[in-house]
Length: 123
Image 1 (cartoon, rainbow, N blue to C red):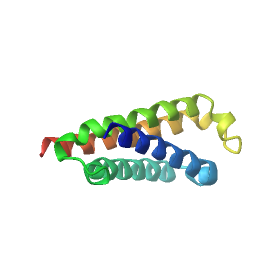
Image 2: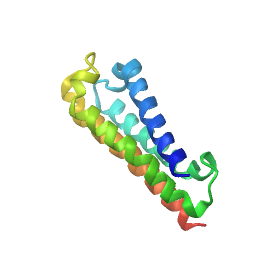
Image 3: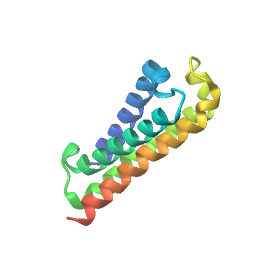
Image 4: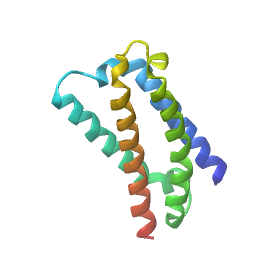
C-alpha cells in the first residue's frame, strides 16, 4: 500500500510537470476569468482525486486519508522544488508566475486531502 501510494504521488507530480511543460502558456492567461477557471479546475480535479483514491489504489475507505497523505507528500515536495526554481523548469513562462503555480499546486493537493478525509470519515 505504501509503495503504491508513493508511486502514485510521483506519477501525479510527473504528469503535472509534463502538463505545465507542454501547455503552461495556456494556464497563465491574462485576466481574472482564466485565473478563476484555473483554481476551480484545480479544486475539482483535486477533490475528484481525493474522493476516488480508495478505488484507484484498491484500499478500504478507512485508509483513504492515509494513502492520500502518502500520495500527496511527494507531489507537494516536488512541486515546491519546481516552484522555487520556476524559471529553470519552465523557461517559456514568465518567472513571476511562480507564486501562482505554487498556490495552484497547494490548492490541488489541499482539495485532494479534503476529498480523502471525506471518504475516510464516511467509512
